[in-house]
Image (tube, rainbow, N blue to C red; front, top):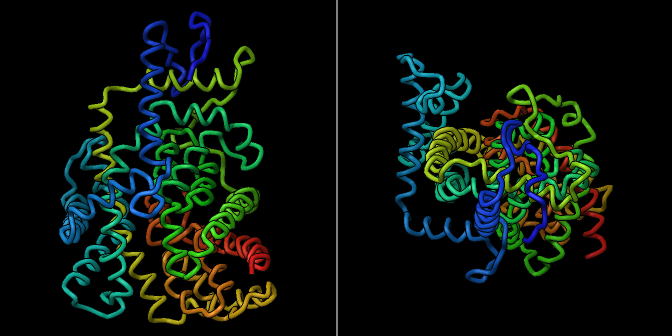
Length: 468
């Protein structure tokens, strides 16, 4: 990456704040290499796909799988400890009311609103019921709480460990500024978003939905995104990874047509990303910022080319970063915040959602209006496909588990693809959004889920009819 720019002509740059200046001379060169090396490391971890063990994955996936294998059954005890400490710590802070400094780690981890206190209580109650196999089948069944305890959390704990600790390489050393500047015009025109949202999209598409969402949350908290922009990115670009898309395709029995399956998902996601920001509830979100004012400036000065300005911003961002020790310390705090804040909520919301899908007809009732639409779109076995699609609101994997029994391969193709493009599922993405400072409630998330489902069905069925 060679850029010929006269360093003596460089103005003050707003890479993070108006007070940051572009480095000069030797500092410029060192900061350029800092940007390049750490950005390559971030992309290698989160974005660049490769084949490993017969599947397409990323380095973060390999590290996660390796740690998961090392932990084995002990990951369940780690989950028990996390959820229990989360609730007991929160209860102690609420009842004892210790005098904690506003910026203290303990206050950030355990001083939460009563809704989250109750969520942490439910999470602790459910995980112990599931572990001890004591309580109603609604909670402890292998297909309800067992899915969270046996399948989901053992993946999330090692995933978040590596993801949170290495996330700064992707977000804080200039890559966001570089790609954001290059993509700004496209993202503004098509999606009404800042260019740096391109990194969120890539980290989701090639990494994991939760990773893209973590990037969005972090950028919103630092006021690089407005509330409207953060809501759009969180509910539009937090698509699951290529690797998990293949798992869904294999589960539902369409892996033999995977290339068409994934391209259909990409096309559908692109179209939905253009439409969703322009209709309620996302279009009604205000352009207000977490700190009160935007810290983002993606305007390109006339004396710079787009690429020169992209490198300028990236190098200034890298120059502004503190030592790796301080970055690591901050990441550890974020890791415990995610562990103590998210894992209990996943047990609370995920178990209830899976229980409702397994033991009640509520998803059949909710899905009833979808049946005429599916019939209008000439989808075979519409009555069986509709509930499977609605179950995606509880957990992304549910439609594949339920839909694999459908006879028609075309219908299975549609159900599987739709489960990926719906994006919002409460066992992970929905819970993470509710846990964040992004102001979206459950009703808004469900409305977005339904709208995405309808848009997805129109596009996916049109492609499916051409393929089948």
